[in-house]
Amino acid sequence: MSKPVCLPRLLVCTGKHCRKDKGFAKLVSLASETTGSLEAPCQGVCNGPVVAVQQGDDVRWFEKVRSKSLRKRVAVMAASGRSGKDLRNHEVTKRHNIVRGERRMKPLQA
View 1 (cartoon, rainbow, N blue to C red):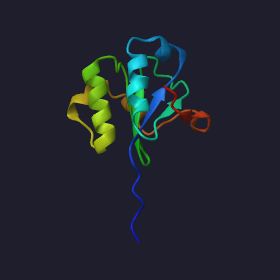
View 2: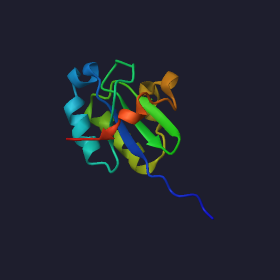
View 3: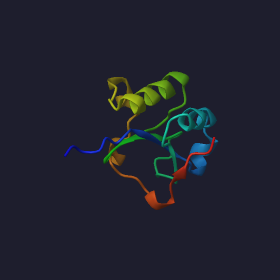
């Protein structure tokens, strides 16, 4: 029996610092177009906007997702499930596979 395929999804930090940061509204708009995107409570990174790509148990957080090109690269990663080398400078490695407040996550509202 094969494992069920787990589609990648985006987790957008909705802490107050991320919400106030440049590019947050556009990030939420992009993420809301991605199936299964969720609002996550503050992740304690506070270098926002902060978004994660989750595929199964693998969660990779990215900070300073402000530019259009960076948002697009994160969306491509979520769609393909493959990590891009060009995202390494924005990855928050200390938060790899850690999600705070999973019980409080809810579907993303654009």
